[in-house]
Length: 101
Image (cartoon, rainbow, N blue to C red; front, side):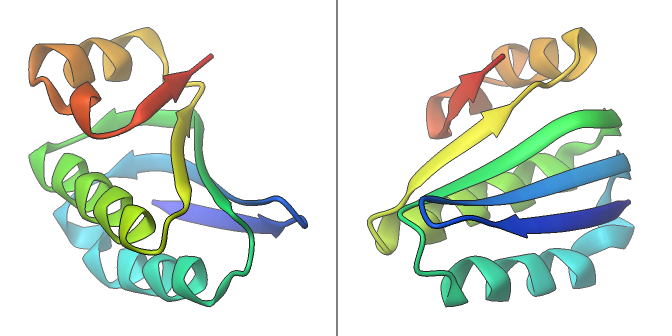
């Protein structure tokens, strides 16, 4: 997985690219630090370029969402492809965050 961040006054957007899996846990720590350090009231994970996510990747998103909520930030998953979106609903992880097209 690769990622790019974009800080705007209202939103920190993290653009995830490629496959999201266990091997990305160190990068997710970096992302978590960026989220914690952001003064923006919203965090968006843009998944337009994600073509695969495993169970560990789902868990990392859940943890990121919980951390955002602790800081009273809105947490949004944006543009997941149909396969990733189906995985969110099949595993009921969609209950942990807002999903937007």
